[in-house]
Length: 428
Image 1: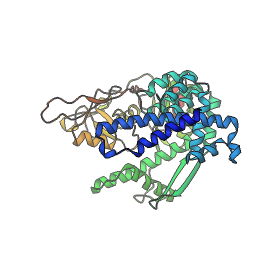
Image 2 (image 1 turned 90 degrees about the vertical axis):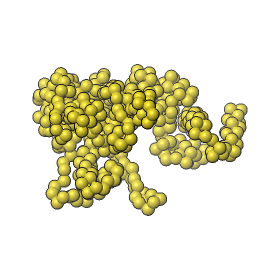
Image 3 (image 1 turned 135 degrees about the vertical axis):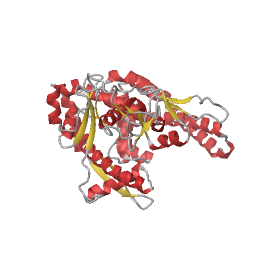
Image 4 (image 1 turned 30 degrees about the vertical axis):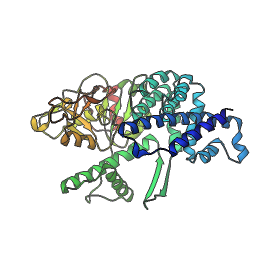
C-alpha cells in the first residue's frame, strides 16, 4: 500500500514536470518553484536513505547479487559508492538521534546538513541541538567547521590519534579523463599531509598572481593553484631559484596546547584546513615555517600601520580573525584579498586591524567598482548594496552574518616564525 501510493505521487509529479513551460514563469514564480523542488528533493533524500538502511538490515541487496547495500544503492541511484555509503551511514546514525531524524523527514534540513550533524552526533550527541539551530542560519561550510570542533572536543587523545591514522591510511589519488579532454581527479589526505601541501601551493600560486598583476593579465586563483601543482610535482622553479617554503598559520588555545588535546570551546585550526588535533598541528609545524596565534591573554588589536604595506603582525592577526571571506554567506577561503573596509586607504584609512577585512576577489570587485560596502564590523558583518541614483540612503542590508569573530590574542603577542619545538616551552 505504501509503495503503490508513493509511486502514484511520483507519477503525478512527472506529469506536472512534463507539462511545465519554464518560459511561462516570471522570476518570482520560478524562484517559488525552486523552493518547492528543494522541499521535494529533501523529502526524497530522507526517504531514500531510511529505506535503503532497511534494505541493508534485511539483506535484500544479496538477492540481486550485490556485494553489499552500498553497492546495490550506488547502482540503483546511479551514484558513486562513496555517496551511497554516506547515505547509509547517516541513516544508521539517525536511529539514535530522533530529533535530527524528524528534522530530516520533515524537510527542515537538507541531506548535507543532516549528514554533517549526524557525524558529530555519533560521537557527541549533546552537540546535536546546537548544531541543528546553527544549521538554520549558517552556511554549510560554517556548520561543518562547527561540527568538526564538536567531534574533536568529544574524542579522547587516543581516539583523535586513531582518527588521524585512519585518515592517513585511507589516502588516495584518483584521476580520469574529463569530457573536455583534460584530466580530472579527486584525492583524500590526512590533515597533516594536506596542510603541508596547501602551504606550498598557496605560496607558489601567489607568485603567479603577482607576476600576472605586473603584466596586466589575470586569471582565477584556481588556475594559479593548478599551475603551482604542476610546478611543484615537476620540481620547476618560477624564477630560477628555490621555490617558497610552506608557511602555515595555526590558531590554538594555550590551554589546549599545554594539555595536548582540545577541550570544550577551544580551537586548534590550520588556515585552509580547518580543525585538527593538537598532535597533528605539532607534527605539521615541525618542518614548516609558520606563525602561531595563541588565544590567551594580551590583545593585539592595537597593532596598526600608516603605510599601505601591511605589517606581518597585522596580516597574521587578520588571517586569524577572518579565516574566510567576511561577506555573510560567502565561505571562500582561497585567494582572499585584504580590503580597507571602513575608511579607504586613498581617504587616509589606516592599515590597522580594525580597518581591514579579508574578502574574496568577487566581493572585493563589487566593493571597489560597484558600490557595495561592508558595515557592522567583525562578528556583525553586513553586506550593503549600492543606493539608487535618486536615493541618497543605501538600501536595506541584504545579508547579515551570524558568525562571531574570534578574539585575536596571544600570550606572547604574535609569535614569530619558528619551530613548534621553540614555542611549546613558552607556554609552560
